[in-house]
Image 1 (cartoon, rainbow, N blue to C red):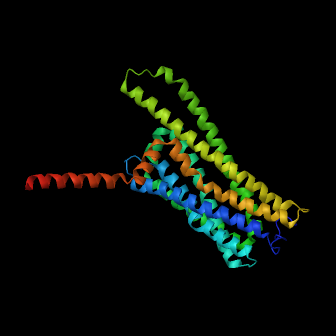
Image 2 (image 1 turned 60 degrees about the horizontal axis):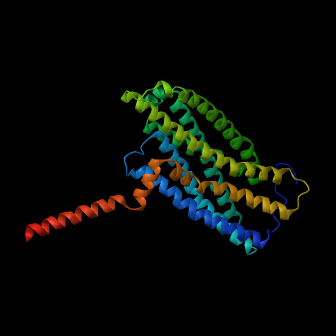
Length: 319
């Protein structure tokens, strides 16, 4: 197999059981990623408890939108492609559609994760400048830039082809994101440790000191949540990058093994799109409360109770 060349196993049919096993995985990802990420976006947009409108949450929603595309478009296209492959047919246009949405959503996810890390870094190390400079409008502009860059960079796929592009993607985009996330989070935790050491100097005698302590605790919890998201990102993307290198560099691997590696790499990246909403619900109270309000239709219940009470008053007045 030549380095960065056309995959010689591209014209070799994958085992039927592998194609349908991958189909089962993509169906599961479709359901989980669609429902979970739609709930995150809904929580930020509806803002049921009036505590979701912050730049950080907008970046979270942008990441969820990228993951939602995986659930609504990429994973279903993957399902269709592997079903077609499983029954012995081939459709290059179908495959190209799957690949381009795959790269756009992956690039948007990487850029959104980078924006989240930089947002936390600025919020913790330069809080006054952060509050003055970053508002929801500017966060929205950053989100737009993320998507414009994601689409433009992914167009390189049509120039160099799938095999070359995924090698370039793994070597540049994933590696750069990993470096940025590692450096920013290391600096964030170093700063937070200094803040924790100053807690003893902040006595609870004044309301200002109590608020400072609560703010530090909240920032620490949000940062830990982001670290968990980043660890899950690494757990999916690092093995995926290894798979990409195996496909491009292994000269003695047989096509059966390459097909297994190919599908594993594809499923791993998409699986990452379904896990983040569970992390937010587990770690962050405002997301948990918003999810509960939406799922139980809290506003609907309040309106129903209000209507019932009004009906009772009207009935009592009439009698």
